[in-house]
Amino acid sequence: MTGITECTVSDIYAYIGRHEERAFVLKFSAIEIYNEVVRDLLSSESTSLRLWDDAEKGTYVENLKEVILRDWNHLKELISVCEAQRRTGETYLNE
Image (cartoon, rainbow, N blue to C red; front, side):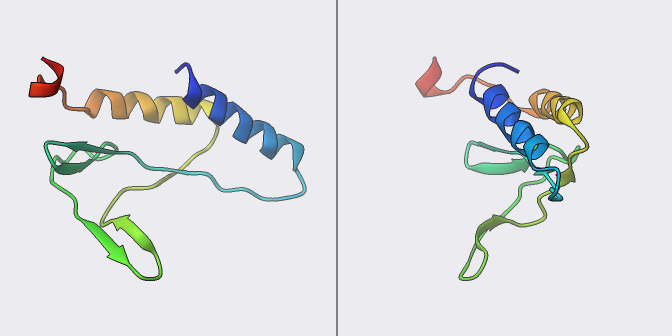
């Protein structure tokens, strides 16, 4: 990872390190929206997920998998899994 993701995650873990008196739980999930289909990139199933609007929760993705992060390396592993799950293809806009 490089760029904004790495900088942001580094800042988050630095903040946690400076506040050892508090307990933090970091959760990770990842979706892909491709050809108007929403997919969970942490799931091996390729079923389409549904977006919902809720007055209390706001917009959320039904049945989206969330993983509690152990550390920075765990996050990098999960991002690699997600990158491998992404669908790629040529569209009119990127021809």
